[in-house]
Image 1 (cartoon, rainbow, N blue to C red):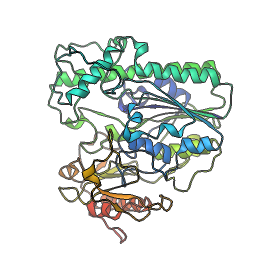
Image 2: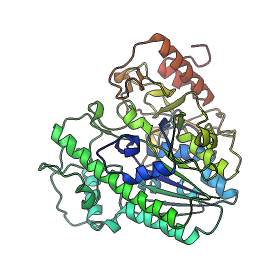
Image 3: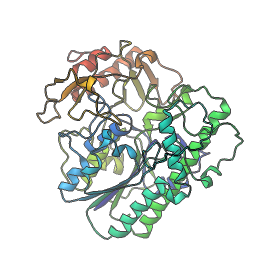
Image 4: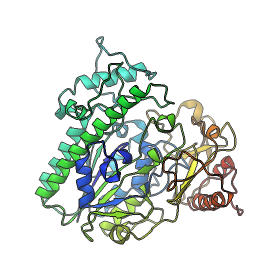
Length: 492
C-alpha cells in the first residue's frame, strides 16, 4: 500500500469550485472532487502553521498546552511511527518554517526529506547591495523581512524557479522513481497559497482588472483600512495563486493516471487553515476570532479500499484525524494518546466520528463546534491570564525563548500524554486581545457568514458542555478553565 498527502498552506475553501466558488479558476480541484470524496464539515484544530503540523504528526490538540514549537520528545509522530514500522516516509516541502527554530525537528521524523527555498521572507539569497523596491501599500512589516522577500523574488522570475513548482517537481521525481515499489508514504507540502501572493503572470492574467495603486499582494494582520478597489485587487492576487495551486494539483492527478496509482494509493489533499480577505473587516488570521473563513477547511480523500468517488461527506472531521487515518491505512496500531479517529468508515459510508471538536490558538478563544453551531469562548480578563506554556522544547517561531522568559521556569506534573515526563511551565506572553471580541455563538447553517451572533442560553449551555468535556479529555491545564471562567471538575 502507498499514500500521498498533498498539503497546501492557507487554502481557502470558499475559493474552490467544489465548494461553490464560481469565479476562481480551479478545474483540477473539481476534477479531484469527482475522483475522491469531498468533506463538507472539516475544521481546523490548533492554529496556525506549526501547531497544525504538530496535530498532523500527533493526532491530538496542541493549542491548550503550548503555542508554536517543535515536536516534543514525548510526542507520537505519525511519520516516525510509520518509518519504525517499515513504511518508507519522504517529505518534499517549501514550507520554510520547518527550517527555523520553531519547527526544527518535524522533517527529521521522515526517512528522507528535500526542500525548496525562497518562500515569503525565507533568509535564502544574500543581497548586500542596495536594491530597488516598489512602493508598498500599508505595509508596516519589518523592512529587513520585506527586503529579504524582494531579494528572493528576483531569483525566481521564471515559474520553474519558484518554490511551488520546484516542490511539485521533487514530488513527481519521487513518484517516477518509486511508484512500482510498495509500502511508502509521500508528503508533498507547499507554502502556497499563503501570502504574499507571488504567482506567475499567466495566472494573474486569469483575473483582469484595473489597478494602478502601490504594490499590494501581502496584507497586514490587521483590520481593513484599504479601499474597496484595493481589497478586490488583493482578492484577485490571492485567486491567481489559488489557480496556480490548482494547476500543479492537476499535474499530480495526471501523474497518478499515468502511473496507475489509483488502485493502491491513498490520496489526501488538505490544508492547515484558511485566510480572511476582508471578510468581517479583517485581513489574515490569529488576531481576530477564527471565523469560518479561517476555521472551516477543504478536505479531499481517495481511499483505494472502498474506491468511493464523486461523493460528499457531512460528518464532522478535523486535522487530528489524519494521523490515525494514515496509520490505519498501513495497518499500524494507533497510539492511545491520539485523539483523532481513523476516517476509513467515514470515507466509505459517512460514519460519524465526532459529536463535537475543539479548535483555537494558544491564548486566544477556545472554540467548539458540533457542525451546526460554533461557540467561541473568550477569556474573562482583559490581561488574558492566567496562561502558561508547557514544553520541553522552548522555542517560538524563529528563535528560542529569551533569557527573561526562562528566569522563573517551574516543572509541571506530567500530563496524561507526556509519558511520565514533567514539562517546563513557563509564563506565557499572550499577544492576542481575545477578551475585547467577547464570547460568540453562531448557527453556521442558518448564518454561514457569521454575521448575526446568537443569544440563546440553552444552545450555549449545550456547547459549553461539549467544550468542557473535550478540554477535560485533552487534559487541559487548570488555568485554561480559570482563564475562560469554566469549572475544572465540577458540573457546568
